[in-house]
Image 1 (tube, rainbow, N blue to C red):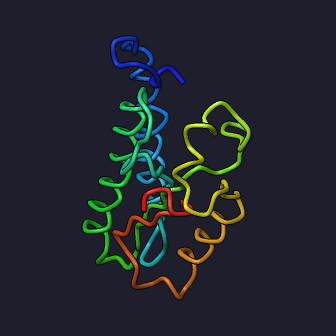
Image 2 (image 1 turned 90 degrees about the horizontal axis):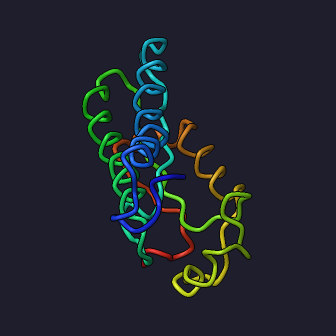
Image 3 (image 1 turned 60 degrees about the vertical axis):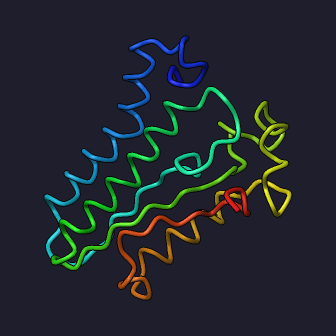
Length: 153
């Protein structure tokens, strides 16, 4: 992604691409969903622990956009809470994916900060999505919840 690297090397195109992927997508997807939602429901955004903690250089634009996701969700929760719709952000920490494998290039600088000494799994993030989408989470809104193995601790 063109928005990761030393700030002096990030181009306008790289910056715009990162903002479009990480912010515009969340805004316009939420807007489109709300157009079809009556009362009640859930909007769950996926941010990143890097909105709050970033342990390496070159991630400032990425962190900027992920902090924007969390801020947007909090503001939207206030705006539509009266409709019975909750809005929350899940902030995964290091998760073993194709884009960020546990044995990938960021592992050496990332793993020392993970309290449980391993990357998370997609299923662990999905479990929180399922919970937030269910009836037991009806009173949780405007929350930013880390699933990070203690990365931000």
